[in-house]
Image 1 (cartoon, helix red, strand yellow):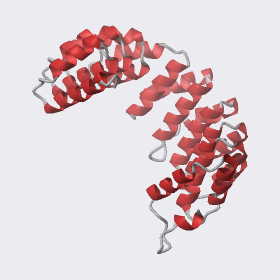
Image 2 (image 1 turned 90 degrees about the horizontal axis):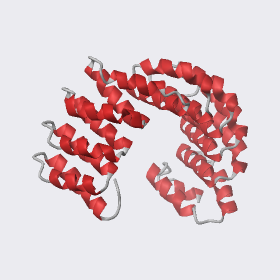
Image 3 (image 1 turned 135 degrees about the vertical axis):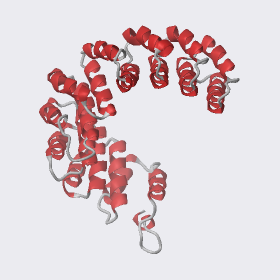
Image 4 (image 1 turned 180 degrees about the vertical axis):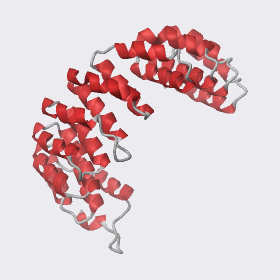
Length: 320
């Protein structure tokens, strides 16, 4: 197979071609596939080695673990990223030490470290907790938000109660996504105080804090936030807050929100109406469908198109 992975000019083929070739190889017997991917892992072409690592992870054969660890330590960053991802998929705790070393390294690139953090969570070994907590504090160089996010989610997966305090500190992170996933991790660890605090943020004088709070409450999926989001949808003076509240109610997927979302289809803001349509589609049901039919007459084309596409899925027996 290897001779087909380069073009006639000797240059590596585009990545999508390589993906196609690897998919073609999938019907081979399991042992043959393993040997093929191991051979590809030794290729002189970076993209071949990278894709081989990904497929060794998907294959689920733990014989690949030592080979992937070796490449994780010595190959270039693209292959290291694939190896870190594959080791998480394989679920073999022999990889824990190597992944911790990557997360603590000053030489590994940011994305490799973020993937290593994710994989440590998947491996479920508490030896990684201290390193993951340290990773929550990484703010330099630029781009480390990916590391903080994946470390937070890994700690939640590990059930690391000792991470609650450092995770709460992330609720003040300058990046909204970091704050969001830190809150999500805290809820997974059983700290419901973050829901109460976020509900309070809906009353802030700062419009950005209210938008952030509405979005976070949707992702936290706590039923306790339902009446507060409904109130924000109906009465907040900022269209962005109302739009975020509508989307959050959709994420809650509670039938009790349908009435408020149906009323929001009359909001003066097309942004709010569009998110109300999306939310009604997420919740589903006969009452939601009736409201979506009314949205087909909305003055905004995007709202009408979204309502139409959701109703079509509903009629086909699906749910968006």
